[in-house]
Amino acid sequence: MENKNVILTQEAIEKKIERIAYEIYEHNYDEPSIILAGIWDRGSILTQKIAAHLHRIAPFTVEVMEIKLDKQKPAEVELSRQLDFTGKVIVLIDDVANSGRTMLYALKPFLQFLPKKIQTAVLVDRRHKSFPLSVDFVGYSLATTLQDMVMVDVSGENISSAYLTN
Image (cartoon, rainbow, N blue to C red; front, side, top):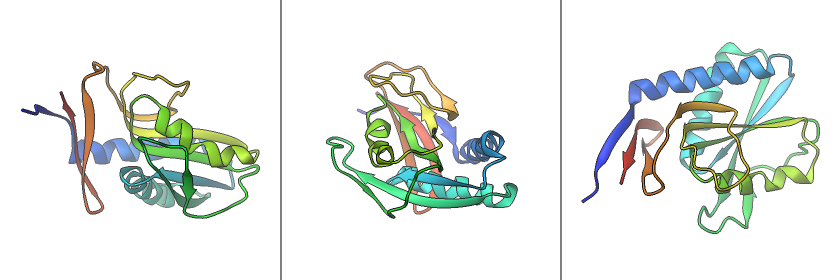
């Protein structure tokens, strides 16, 4: 039997998303534009929500794109739009950072260019990195066992909860 332990409610998630948006703005206030790249599918929903906050608070242009990859075999990475990322600020966004592998592979298309900087944002960071990746903007940081899984419940465009299972 699966044991479900809610770690973030919908209300808490909304506050975390708003705080992440403010942190992204604070770290990029002097930029003319930034690109938010969300990892499909829950990362894309999170990206749209962060973008909505940034549109309200930040004077810079916010471009949104989606990254698709197989999280089990992430060799092929597909971008929703092809852009020249040279000199651009990119914020890579996903719902949960587990080992760091998905985010690391998602960086691959951007490395063909010379971006000004690449930052990362997640709703939940598990701190069990097997790959050399640190997260710049974290909604909630959680120490778990390797057997625990962090799941994010999404219904349409709403993120309803984040929970821990074992």
